[in-house]
Image (cartoon, rainbow, N blue to C red; front, side, top):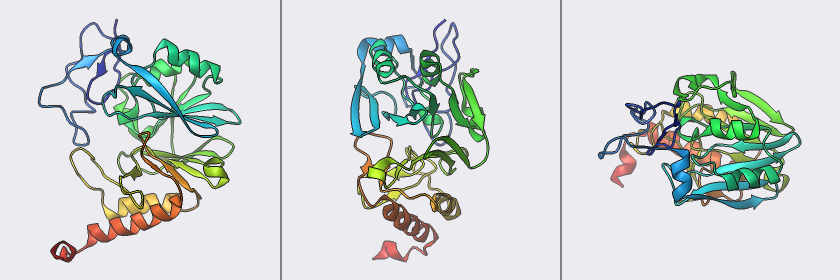
Length: 275
């Protein structure tokens, strides 16, 4: 039976003879169902019209993204660690060429995902590389294809390897997670942020939202909590969710002033909008 994939968010569902009636991830305020309605595809169908491309961001870090873009259009990141390769975030296409290339790079020792919008075909990746999937337990309800490969974790941090730490920051989703890579950024640290810390076109700042397509902001306390959780971790580079969404330097300062700007705007009296 096919495992259908939502064309809007890219999430794969449990195998079934018929297309699912709805996508709970899209049918929720943080995402959306297009006006044309809910539609579906499969990994096999995607492989006939698309392929994956690879880009090295820095030594030990390779981006993997689908072209032409599909669904939300994020790219995954393949991170080399002392315990093996970790896939950060996921995409909705796993074709034969990608399997061959990733195996040539050493395969995967684990998969970690920032939030449900980027679950993609995570179970396909886990099966292909015999790798566990690390998801925060707070987002358990959004798993549309349960599998023994999925390992839920609790708390605010989970070390995956030397200098590689998952941090549950919350915000965009209750289990919203970022990955801190101490050896990244030329040894000055890197933050792999998904959508939890959103890299925006103005690289002097980042931002935060409950819903990006529907423009629902987070509260100031939620954003300040993200700031407090990441305060102990140094990072020079912030890798967002797309190939071109990167803060290339001074990342911690960019992050901290963005927290301050966001909180001031949310708590403001509106006078700034009259200037």
